[in-house]
Amino acid sequence: MSRLPIRPSKRDLPTSSSSSSENGQDFAPAQKKIRKDPEPVKPHAAATIIGGRRNPVAATRAPISRPVRGVGAATVAVGPSRGVLKQSIASTAAKGGNVKQTAAPTCPKTGGVGGPKRQAWDLKGKFSDMEGKVRNYQTKVKATNQENEALKETMVQSQSRVVEMEKTLARQKSQISEYEAELQALSGVRDELEMVSSDKSTLEKELSNLESKHKVMETVRDSQEIELQTLKKTLARLQVTVRDQEEEVCSLKDTVVQQKDELHAGEMDRRRLHNDIQELKGNIRVFCRVRPLVEGGLSKHIQLAASDNKTITLAKTEESHTGKTADTQKNYNFNFDRVFGPQSLQQEVFEEISLLVQSALDGYNVCCFAYGQTGSGKTYTMEGDECDESRGVIPRAVKQIFRAAEKLGAKGWEFTFTASFVEIYNETLQDLLYSGKARKGLEIRKSTNNEVTITNLTYERVCNEDQVLGLIMLANRNRSTAQTAQNDRSSRSHSVFQLDIEGVNVGRDVKCKSTLCLVDLAGSERMLKSQSQGERFKEMTAINGSLSNLGIVITALANKESHVPYRNSKLTYLLQGCLGGNSKTLMFVNIAPEPDSFGETLNSLRFASKVNDCVIGTANANRK
Ligand code: ADP
Ligand code: MG
Image (cartoon, protein in one colour):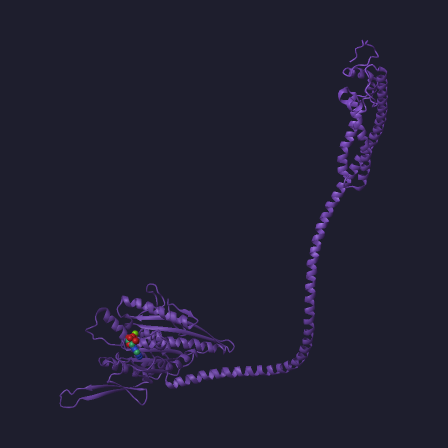
């Protein structure tokens, strides 16, 4: 600080502390210049805006090569101006009033020219310093203005460029969306293409497969062609052979026809001869069968001839009444077509009957019945036991019939079979194939062509052996039901199994019809009159009546009487078709070997031999 009195004057330079106001006055022109044109700040904003916009433009245009270059140029142009702007902003801010802050970089304390610090009194020096500073600022302002102008120009250019670029951007955006659409379309095409190419590869594989198959087939075809050629040659040879053979076949066919005729004639001859043999054997035949003793063997009073199997002798030792003479032995001799001893088997017995069964298929009525006292073996002979070896006449006959019918089928015969099973008890008929309550209204009827049928009776069509065996079992069940109701009824009733046989040979126009009748008669034993009363007496009368009438009928037939009393009993009425001249009859007389059956045995043998003596008229087959 100076000790000199200092007058305040216009030219007095302020102290450094008050320099700010003076500076403010000194800088006024410059400030005014700047204030006059506040625009210089705007370019900053414009530049900032440009700078701000540049990024998105650059970002959006990055992938597109050409436009990027253009933008790059713009950025370069704007870049340097930014630095200038910063300077101008700084300077403008300084001029804006905050001298303390801004004076530091632009106005050094030394007076701006870097000289030594002026003395307080060196006002002139200070003034010149100030002038220098003013000039500096003016130069700077000028430069800044110029820069501003340049920036304005640049900004205008940039704006037009921006507009241009926006247009370009819009164009490119639309192009991009076009490209995107195109791309989308192309991706669809690509998918299609992928599918097509996968299809193609599949097809190629298939094709190669087919090609390899084709090759194999070609090979096969080649070999087959060769084979075909060979076969053609063979065929030609064979055709010649076939022609020869056809001629041969024709002649053979003629021979076959001829031989069929001969066969048929042979078959008819066989039937006739078979029948002749049966007739020679007798149209009514009687077989005697002796039941074994329960303990086995045979009683002494029954003797069978060792020489043949046709004689049976019943011996009875009669004690002397006076006691003076020796006991006398009385022999009763009987001859039958065949006598079967106690050891005879069911099979042996059937062999003798099988010829008659054949006659039934040939169209002759056949009747086979078992006569004898109760317990003599009638049921055993006719039905037998269930086991194969001891089966009786009925199941064996049925088996033979179906087998023979099958064989005759090969010769053009067709058979139909109808079975029925009836019981005659107390002169009433019972249907054994009907399981319900006893049927009423069973009556024997004789048609105009002499066929005997029973009204309301079950006639079951059968096709095989098993069906018939089933019916026989059913009949036995029904019979045993009746038996429990009436004790021992089966021995006091006749059971009649009938199989109606109808045969047709369509080719030869021949038919035959016959009945096979198998009868298990009621026990022939007679009863003491004193023992038979009431129901028992009625039964006895019925049995005796029908059996004795059977004898009478046979005798009448033997004597060729004009009237045969068939109608006298249900049994003979039912069997009349099988007992007449048109039939073959076989009677078993079954005898029990026990000594106490002697009387009944003698009676049975007498009855049987009476039948045996009958000669029934020559039978005619029921042929049309
Ligand atoms: P019928 O029917 O005459 O009353 P069966 O046939 O019932 O007599 O015979 C009486 C018994 O004698 C039965 O047990 C039967 O098995 C037996 N029998 C009959 N004949 C013979 C035979 N030839 N061999 C063995 N057993 C027989
Ligand atoms: Mg019996």
